[in-house]
Each structure stands twice: as structure tokens, then as C-alpha cells.
Image (cartoon, rainbow, N blue to C red; front, side, top):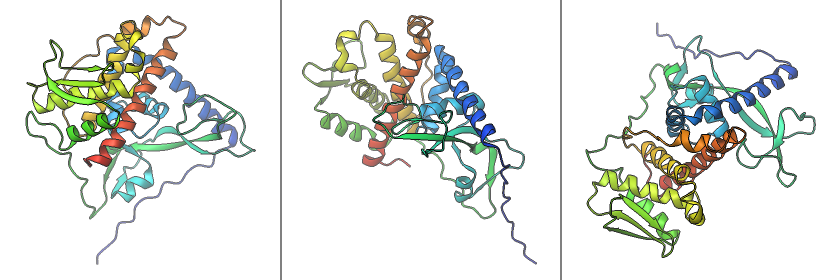
Length: 309
């Protein structure tokens, strides 16, 4: 006789409102503490690896995932994994993150705040209020295929020296729409540069396709992060701005299938600690938010122009 395996259902324990508020407060404290781990090159690189697989999550949840499971590569809720043909393994513990929900008058101030699209925005009277609830997500390593389920698609393999199909063209169209002319030519000792005075992006002509598309992503990131609008501050804050642009390039090209090169963001600790002990957390959070937002925006555009998934 043929038997059918029924997916195990996880039953949630009923929790008091006080317990729920305490967990939300604890998660927010955990986020604040996790921000400070970004002050080292190792911590910043761990953040970038999380961003590659979790680029649709808010900065707050990216750092919460990183703090609880630094080896996570792709997370989803329990039900979402089932819809994808996978089952969370028995006795696995979820990664707790914060999910927004519409604010109701009965929500207390301990779990409600004003926010637009992310859960990291400061309060403001002209923005709708949202409250949060703690939910569990699971990394793919905590799951296994359901019987008869189709395997997840493998990551695309790129020819040596080549970039992801369509990525260069998508970035070129973004640059054109932003009012920039894209050139290939001499760049001196650099791989590329952006010249906001006459709105030119130039990439070295002799770069291999993979290096060229990564350089173009870096230059587009400078524009998207607002660095060209603050060109007078570039020399003063060069370390932070280069970190932000290179970080966006790392996330976007890695998410599109390129193998990330081995490199160290060597100046993270320098510019972060130069902010002073009373501002280091704010500086790191601002830089990480800039990177996460720019990467999300650029990946959204690229996926529309040249789908890679």
C-alpha cells in the first residue's frame, strides 16, 4: 500500500502580550549591538554576505539574521519553504526577525513606531505608524526537500572572465537614464571613474568583461549613493564613500551570479572609529543603510532589465 507523507505542522505556543513586547524590545537591542560589529573589515564582509542572499530584507532584519546565524545564505518563513517544496527539519530553531504590521490604536508604544517602507526609519508625524511582531524564518540549510519536490534551480555558472548575461547592458541603460555618458578608454591607474562635471562614466578599455562590469557597477553605485552630489566631501570621507560603492558592487554582482573576489575593505575600521565613540554606531548604521538601500534599488532595476533568476 502506498503511503503519503504529510508535512509536519509546527504549532505556535500562545504567548502573552507582555512576552511579545519583551521579545521585540530584545530584538531591537540586539540590532543596536550588532551595528557595532560592522566596525571591522571582517564584520563588514559578513554583513555583505548576508546582503547578497537577503537583499530584500530591511537592514534591521539583515543584521538580526547575521547575529543569530552568520552562515545563513537564504532564508524564508516556514510556510514559504513548504510552497517551494522544502520542509524545515525537526527540532530546528527559527531565526527571529521583526515583521511590520498595520498599526492599530490598541498597539502600545513599545512595539509601534512610524515608518515608511522599512522598519528602520525614525518616527515622524507625517508618516503612517506601523507596529511589529517577531516571526521566525529558517535558512535553507535548516530544510530538506519534500518527497517528489522538484529541486531548486542551481546558481548559474559563468564562463571564466565573463560577467552575468545582460548586466552590462542593464547598467549602461541605468547610467543613460541618469544622464551619464558611458565610455571605454584610458583611466590612468584606475579601473574606472565618474566625472560628474560633464556627467561621464569611463571604464578602462582593456579590462576583462567580468572586471569591467564590476567596475561599472562600482561607478553606478557612487551615483546612486549620492557621492557625486557631495563631491566636495569626497576627499574628506573617501574611505566611507569607496566602502559604500564597493559594497554595493559586491552585493549586486554576487547576487547576479559572479564569484566575489577576495578583498578586504581595509579602511572600514579607520573611517568608522574616526567618527568618534559617541557617533560610531550612527555612522555605521547610516553607511550600512545606504549600501542596503542602493543595492536593493539597483538589483530591482537590473532584474527588470535583465532577469538573472
